[in-house]
Image (cartoon, rainbow, N blue to C red):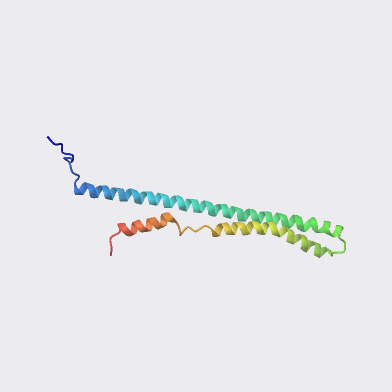
Length: 135
């Protein structure tokens, strides 16, 4: 007697379509969750860059105040031939460089964030295109 390798229970077309629909819904939910997570990550990066900008501004202000009050007087004492206003100008530039560098780095970090060009967004758009009926 030969053995029949086929199953006696074939899945119905309805159960197959239901399974496909269920899988598509699961995929859609997972993509939405991934999209939310990536948006949250982008917001965290934006927050971190904003904190860096604020820290740069604070460092810039504190540095400018200290350099503008202490070092010009010291420079004028060391090199009396430079007028006091020239000493303040020299020291002011020295104080502006570190703060400006911090702000420059933070702005570059902000420019590297592109929330609209995201792999999960592209995949979500593609899935929506395939799941919505043509009009």
